[in-house]
Image (cartoon, rainbow, N blue to C red; front, side, top):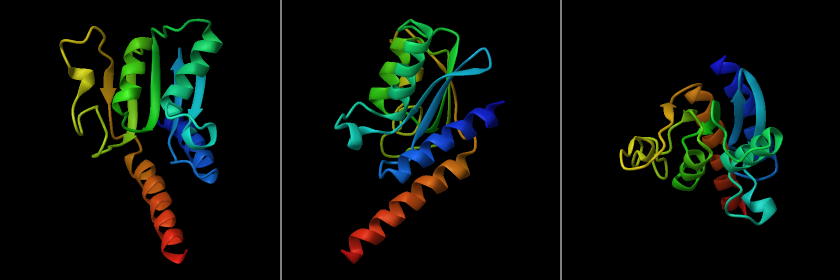
Length: 153
């Protein structure tokens, strides 16, 4: 099941990349069904908060009629940043599954571990590395292409 949901997140990530956004995708799952979908959209929406996780949380909250999402899991192609981790905790997501680690802004163990911070009032279970190679390849390919274009211009 984990691979199936991460593949759905990868489809969304590819769609974001095709639009010139950093290719990150996320899905929210409840009782084995996708209830929220999101892809990175900060450039197109002119919104610094429009990360894939935030968009998926918003979609799930709208679909379920509640800003709290207990019993839901979030699958995302890249380790969450601090902003997204805060939203995940406020939504009461029970578990986060991510693909590639983010050594620059990841807060599920790469830079810091906000999810493991005992002083915070909600703790989601974390599992990293699901389809990590595919997720990382999508990101590295996107940035390599971007660097290639900037060198030509």
